[in-house]
Image (cartoon, rainbow, N blue to C red):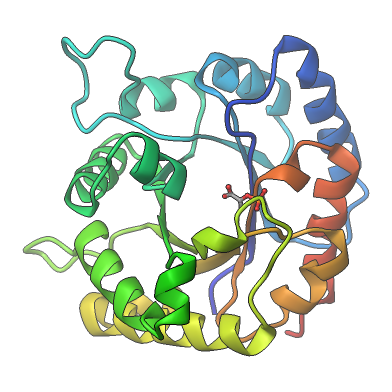
Amino acid sequence: MPRTLIAGNWKMNGLKDSLTELDHIVEGLSGAHTEADIALCGPATLVALMAERALGSRLLIGGQTCHHAPSGAHTGDISAPMLKDAGASHVIVGHSERREAHAERSTYVQEQAYAALEAALIPIICIGENYNERQRGETDRVNERVLRKSMPYPGAQGDKVDFVVAYEPKWAIGTGQTPTMEQIESAHAHIRSILIEHQGEAGVDVQILYGGSMKPGNAAEILNIANVNGGLIGGASLKAEDFLAIYEAAASEPD
Ligand code: PEP
């Protein structure tokens, strides 16, 4: 059974002053009742500072995207080795906001995932249907197509590849709406079956996070669903109190 991972995504929020919020998270973690993993994916300008402030705590730091090349003439981009050098352990790739606003397609997301692995970062690969796809009953078909094209595969040696999947229904992101618990369970079970089909036994160990309007009030219920191995949290990760409450909700999971 994969370890639980609670990952925050600050998106394009956060100035140096906001690091006091990270300090509160780190303080809160010392008294936490769960052994779950916890990560915070900050804006590129803060990643190094966040990693410094989190040093010695269990809080891991991540980036929110990376270029597929390790370096070069790509003005404004950030590479996976740069994030690693800044102290990151994870990087989000293929978030729906980037797929939409920056036209990042799944084949590109897969290149980003390989770039992350090459730099010893763990990619958090986001997938999920939009509202119309859900209404048309296409959720599983969309998730399968997008995941198959976005995820990395074991190499010729058959070595396990270390990545995380975040199932984020686009219509649930930042809207306050969430799927029913049955819908989440069904989507996660289907994602698990795709992972096993394409990654072999290693697919059992891939963490599948749920993302989309997760908050202290619904976290425990969502985290208790089969094949939900944690959460990717946007808005509620900006406040230490809310983020810590979601992290604590991981403690109520059954063994
Ligand atoms: C996200 O953007 O990954 C996300 C889940 O956002 P929110 O929690 O605000 O819905």
